[in-house]
Image (cartoon, rainbow, N blue to C red):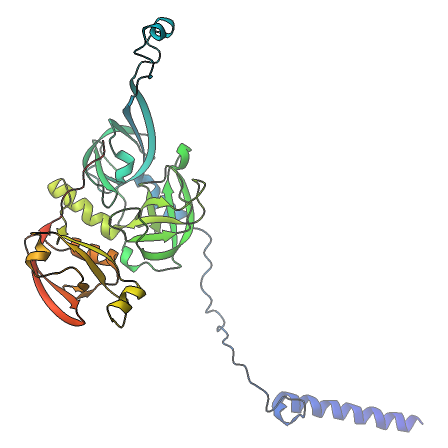
Length: 383
């Protein structure tokens, strides 16, 4: 009996050894190896190839924060008279306490020091109609500011302070940022003091929101609240990529949908303001609307791309160049027009007084028209 157990143990040991060798070297020989079943291929990172762990963005914040300022504005607002102020009996009992006059109001926002000479970029709506502007730096210094120029249609403004040793921000390349890139929003929300929030770029090239006349926003989920307007949106290296401008919200607080004007636009506007005191844009004198699929079908167009000319100003550059109502503008100087917002930006970039080539579709025929660009009329300032 003992001999039989010894033979059984030896046989089992040899069998397990053979199974181990076959499983390791030739698993395809085993009946349960799954031969003939679907093979799933996965990619595994090589050892040591993992991205370095990011512990924070403190260096980027510290680099940009000194260049972000708080802006406090005050203005006098006319208060209407009480409707009963002309009644002698009412005046006898209440005197002049309900008499009209002026009331001083204040508001706050943010700004970005764009140059050591004291020029600060902010939003037009932050300093609009302000009687006094005070700027507070991150190092504790304060100074009165004067408006150099504003551009209501892009909601940008340039103000200046007379201070020395100003920490100007470094401009980044906004055209290179992409969806998913990390960004920091720096400003003074609700007047609590300088605050940094973090998020990612949610979208680029946002337009058609009805916020500004000219829109090309960076969308981010970094928290932007009241008082952040005019503040900095910086990349992971602390370089300026946008000017925080607006949020989409039902409550007035951040819900993760904020918009910033890219520095490519802000820099162009600032340079023109510093050179001439205002912004000059191209204009052709047309009224346009987006080309919907229904309109494209009615015009027998293959794609709903372009801007429909809904009206042409009499005597304007477009009429003189042969543009007619019902034309579909598909390109400006060879650059394709996707919709009315793109068309507006392309035309605005043209130089007044210079010739420009427009490509239009008329009765399904493509035409090349040359016009002389006019100067876009200045938007009236609100009082």
